[in-house]
Amino acid sequence: MRKFFLVMGLALALPSTILGLFFVLYQLVKNDVISWNTLLIILLIVVSYTLGLMVKNVLGPKNK
Image 1: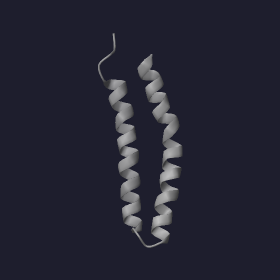
Image 2: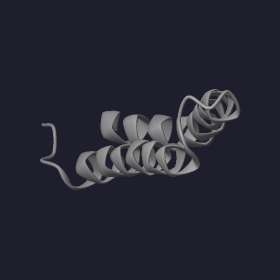
Image 3: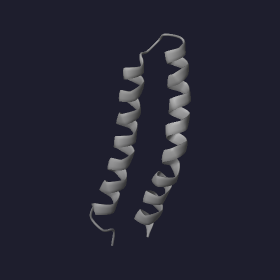
């Protein structure tokens, strides 16, 4: 049951993580600190990592 709550927590946190990270990175793009390509790469890495954690926790060994 613990894994269920862990995966649900990650799933619920994903949209707010994307929005918050996009807002911060967009400010950096607006101030010419990073490029749009860098923004997209960072967003893809964070989303992929979060989805990977979700899959890892679902398919991982069962706690007994």
